[in-house]
Amino acid sequence: MKRIYIYITLLAITTTVACNKYVDTPLPKNELVSELVFTDDKTATAAVTGLYTDMNGFNYQFANVLLSFLSAMQADEMYYFSAFENYDVFRENRLVPSSQYVKSMFADQYGFIYHTNACLEGLQKATGLSPNVKNQLLGESYFMRSFFYFYLVNMYGDVPLITTTNYEENGLKPRATRAAVYDNIIKDLNDAVSLMGDDYPTGTRVRPNKAAANALLARVYLYNQQWAQAEATASKVIADNKYSLQKDLNKVFLANSGEAIFQLQPVNVAGGRNTWEGFTAAPANATATAVFRLDTLNFIRRFEPNDLRLTNWTGFRKTSTGATYYFPFKYKIRVGTLGVITEYSMVMRLAEQYLIRAEARIQQGKLDEGRADIDAIRVRAGIPVLSNTLSKDDLLKAVAKERHLELFTEWGHRWFDLKRTKQSSAVLQPIKGANWQDTDTLYPIPVDATSTNPNLTQNPGY
Image (cartoon, rainbow, N blue to C red; front, side):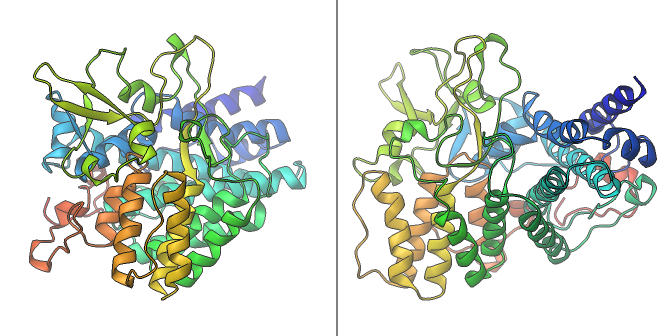
């Protein structure tokens, strides 16, 4: 009974950490966590996998809706039709350190990082676990810690690098440089690759494996302009025969899709909900109004004639005046049959790896190979292959366009792409130095965090 109590305490505290201080909420004594939670395979697995439940278990958590939808409003993909101040500040770039979702996304991720740190410490001390299970769980924990830091550093810039559960030290941590955070991300991902297996632990794709770690590592190399490493690492994922581009676009976001590298399994199907993405974006019925609407000028008009992504991944409505507007429709189920889950939240998928490799190859002057990777995505979308006479600059514009049309409203890709390439819109006009504002590229550090940590400085411009 004591073991169960301590295990429940661990999960309860990591689930509710966002309600307390951001990086200094203590867990139970490490000796107790290590001794009682990580003594057998079953409880140790539950402690690690509880993180995925937390990520997907509550409406508007960091995962899914907040990051995917709010960053799409900051870029050139989407807007919220009705007035709602907490969303409007993103669309209109009026963020302040007290903005509600700025705070919750920061808090959620540090709560999740605290969870992974506790698991890593417990697992490293554990002596009673099966070696394969222990390695897999360690690898998952390293992967997830790197995953959250990837988003923190791209959303907030320099951030505190927390790698232990020492809450007294953590509560006073200053911001680490972007380079230091990325160094830690790369180290964690390499550790994850070395520890995790090729197969998924449960057969379903809702826990990361070696390919997931390589997929994120390829993205990190791309963001850091390490072109050769990005190409080589993405190639490992593409060569894995577990993954293939789904020919039917309506099957891409289904549970255990052949294109899925890592998904989140819905945990609350009350009323028939599957994913939060579908519940939030899909209209209630065939005539209902959609409040999340895609930007016609900067996004919808970019689709070429007969692009299957427009017909399969967007929906449309006619207004009373005859005007047409579009909404995200990658996830079809808003409310379905109670207890029936057919769609999972897609976190990472194979199409991104083709586009990572395409960009990395083009940057290295491998134009034919890069064009072939872009064409793999275009052919799947039902549109013609690119001309073999395109220049390097033209091909880079082509891969940016395909990333926009392929990955829209998924996990901040568009906003991050605009920032990392210093582009301002769908027409990809370079942003000149004098017009490049810190407040365009980074969220403010939440006021709750700076008020409890005297060493935590604010981003410029806020």
